[in-house]
Image (cartoon, rainbow, N blue to C red; front, side):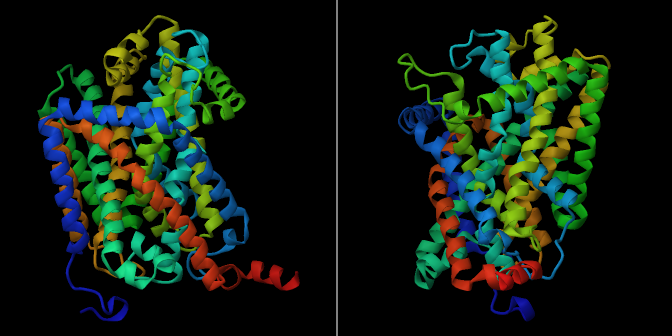
Length: 526
């Protein structure tokens, strides 16, 4: 047994009671779906289509309710509660803190959606717009921005208050969903099979999500690398890129938050800003600024319409954004606990209000700018006839990215920079993921220690093997849909953790005892 803060904790590196069942279930899911990809994809798609047809309204209201809950916790008495000692300074300054949350929240996915999502919508636009028309392009870019708005970041962050509270205020050794629900269900449930089931559901969701992210992130680099080197797509190329990624995010995760994740995240903010400026200078900068302005205006003018859009009166089916919004929110729910655990871990010294509002608005603002630049670049090439983006997207959406970038002046240079930024973005996402999984499954006292470095490397290896296995057999598509379906039980757990956070703070009267001095003085005067 360990002494000091680790008193009473196991000397084992990993908690096999939740890790082993999760890994076994993952393998049992992956192998049959990978072996019978076509059949499993048809089955999963039919299930997902049924969910879209009967529960679109539910996902839409789910995301909106989370935003309302986030604003309530932020601007009520709970918002002033400090995650940690009320007198300690935050672990990171605001720029570092926002950069880490942005890198975790967006990752390389923003580069894929920013470049291609507007075109997917423009092919099948909503609200009666004509396919491929200028209006359809505006709907497309506005929707791309909507995908990275406060609803999705509310999904990511709203379990964080409970997780941060048990870790930094109550100083619990294990930062787990079951522990966060102790005040709701009691010791018998949390210490028994019920608590283990909650923890296993969480772990399965993030293991599958991490494997899918690595698998879907690889083409963002391999397609552009193949264009740059004038070679074809192959598993060998994917394997080489994946090995480089594993090396990078293993090092970053091994170094930890301060020396690895923080430095990479802040570096990538500077690189992304430099890339956007470079594209503006060598590309259609004026058009991009105008198109960005139009897109923001279109989104704000139609935000409520997009947020509540179910296309219920269309008896012949529905437009692209209906099914995609459901999938996007469901897929985001799969990642919700991972983002929340990581946000909680790095938020020591921050108030609940600071944590929630930073996660709601910092990634939103950056993603809108990224979508404005990347989407505007593609829209300009489509409108001028330089690149048939809509035709390419209907055949292979990923192929549109190198087609657009290579048509810029200094196309090779642009491709190289894009590859570097995409690599770092995915690295920051996956090192955060391995760090979080190691924190969650380890036996160290997480209120006083970082997760074991050896365990971080083991987690990185497991994620990589799962992703490569699926990519080799061709089973990523079923798992991607399955990851979206797995968000359904996570939704129930999310609402449970929001209630648990409120209940813990009520029981502890945290809004009185765990706030900064200025808030205590204000209460004493009132």
